[in-house]
Length: 93
Length: 480
Image 1: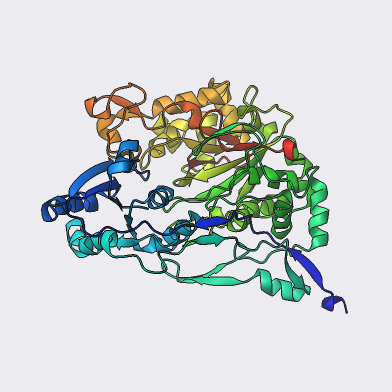
Image 2 (image 1 turned 120 degrees about the vertical axis):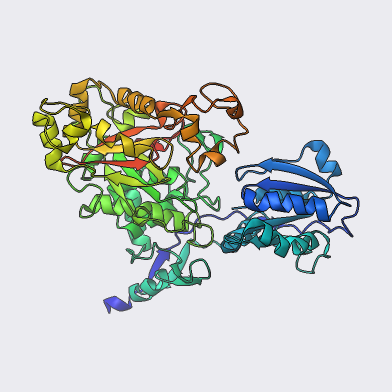
C-alpha cells in the first residue's frame, strides 16, 4: 500500500568538525604569592565589589586586573602567559 | 569561551563567572572548544553585587585550587556521526521523526524542536531533494563558501572561505541547504535565494535582540513571484512564506542554534518565526538605487539582505488619511507638527517620525516605505537614497550629555575608555555640549526599502546595513 512505502530522508544537520578533547590545566596548590589575573568583562555592579573583596581579603595573592566593558576579554601578553598562574573571567554573557 | 579554552590548553587554570541561565551555553561552547569540563559558577541577575560577591567568592577561588577530578583530566577525540540519510521509513514515521523535540531546562522549561522551527515541515525525501537541486548548477557535495571577499563582525573573510554557521561554526553542503529548502516548502526556483541566505551563515540574535528577516532585491523577485506589494511583510504569498522559514530552519540545523542553550533572546519576536519580503524596484523614484545596487550589484542582478534586528520595529505613527491631508493641503496633526498648516505638499514626512527614532536607542534605522512616500521625498529634493541617509544621520546629532543617557553606549564606548570616532578625541575629554551622532559613525548604516502599498504607511526597524564592503547583502545569481 502507498502509505507503507519506505523512503530515505536526508540529514539537514550541519557538518560538525571533530574536536580534540583536552584536560583542564592542573590546579594550583594554593594562591599564596601567585599571580592571578582578574579579567573583567561587563557587570561592573559585581566586578567592582569583587575586585575590592579580592584585594582586601586575599592580600597574599598578586592580583593583576584587566578590564573591558564589553564581552571580549583583554588577552594576556606573551610575557604574561609565562608568568600568570591563574585567571578569573567575570562576568561572561 | 574560546579564549578560556586557549588558556586552559596552555596550562593556565581558569574559572569563569557567568549568569545561571547561561550554563547550557557555557557547557556547549566549552565542549565545542575542546575543553568540556571548564569550571564555572553563576553570578546573580538580581542580587546587589556586594551581596552576591560574599556568596560566591570562596567557591570561585576554590575552583583554581581544588584538584582535578578524573573527568576533568580526560582527553580524547570527539567525532560525531554524520550520516547523509538520517531516517528510513514511511512518511508517517518520518513525520514523527522530524517533529521530535527535546525538553530544554531553565531558562526555557519547555520542549524545543530538534530539526524544525517548531512547525511541521515538508519531508525531505531523497527524491524531493534531488528535484530541489535542479534549481542550482552547484554540485550537491559542494561546501557553502563566500562568493566574494567580505568584511564581517568576525573580520575579513575571503571568497572561497567556508561559511561557518552560527552559533556552532558548523559547515554545510549545497545538498544540506536543498534539504532544508524542501523542509521550508520551497520550490527549485527558490534554491538560489536559499543558498544566498546560507552564505550569510545565518547569524542569530543575542539575549536582548529581536531576530532576523530577509529582503530580496532584483529581477528574481518577479521570476519567483514574491510579493513586494500590499502585505509584503505578512502572510499569504507562498514564496515569501517559504523563503521566510529558511533562516530559522538553517540556524537550527546548520548552525546548531538551540533556543535557551546557545540562542538566548529573552523574549525573541515574530521575526524569528520567519519573515521575508521583497523590494519593489519598480516603485523606486528616479535615481534611487535598489538594495542590490547599493551593495555593488548591477540593477539586473539579484541579491538578498539578511537583516538582524537589534531593537524595535516602529511604525504607523500617523493615520493614512492624516498623511494625505498633510501632503495634499497641509492640514491635520501632521501639518500642525511640521508647522506647514495650509501649505500643500510635498512635505518631508520624515520630520514627523524623527522624534521617535532615537528616543530609546542609538544606531541607524531601516525604513520601509510605500512608493508614494518615497516619491514625496524625491519631489522634496532627495534625489537619491544616500541623500536621505545623510539627512537622517545629520538629524541624529545630539549633545554628549544626551548621548550618555542611552544604555548601550556604556558598552559600545568600552566604558567611555575609547576614542569618539568623529572628533578623534577621547570620550572623557569631550564637554557635555559637544555634538555626536546617535545614528552611527556615518550615514552608511541606514537603509531604505520601498514596498507595500497603497495605504500611506512607513515602518522603521532599528538596525540597518553593516560595514561598507560587507553588510548583510548576498548575491543570488552566483548560486543559480
